[in-house]
Length: 233
Image (tube, rainbow, N blue to C red; front, side, top):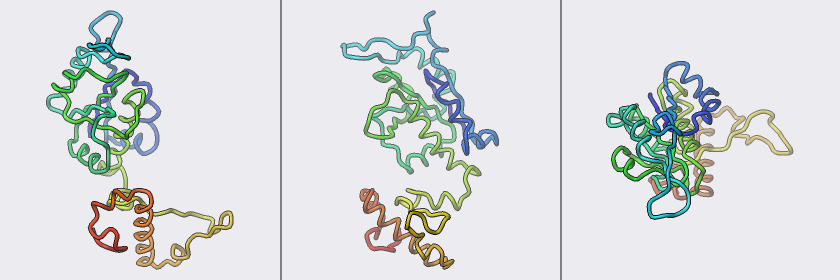
């Protein structure tokens, strides 16, 4: 999988891309993340990439010329281009899967008040948000999307681990416990110590459903029989 990120701050990604599972996935050639410095495509000697908005208002807007130059250099018309913005579609597991299926993506990490709308009109295929709040730029959302996508690339995570994770089955994940058996007066649930696989599976399903009802009841709307304990999807 190939991901190119257009950003004013490529240095923010360095440790993130080298660490843990994502770092290993890159070393093994399963995912290739390319960082593109937007200033390299500036058209003036000051390497300016932003300007004041027409119509007035606070803040600055990323100019169209450098963005267009970067996007053309990355062959954007033949790749799926995503603009990270608070006004985009809310990122969820289904959207992550859609992005992975594209195989080759360009991510635009906006800054300031955003990017010139003409770039959105001409190049952007999708607009994605990681939540209903505002950040200083699109770099952190880009990292979130890259991390989520990398876990779905073949060979990066064991299949059995993926099947157990939150949202894969439409619900949040069940609670986890490890040694010691007792900590601060609280014991690991007996069922997890029983070695009885079917009972453990049932317990985990029940716990997952209960936690989803408590923390994310909105997810249950998409699960047939979700409120009936062990109902199937």
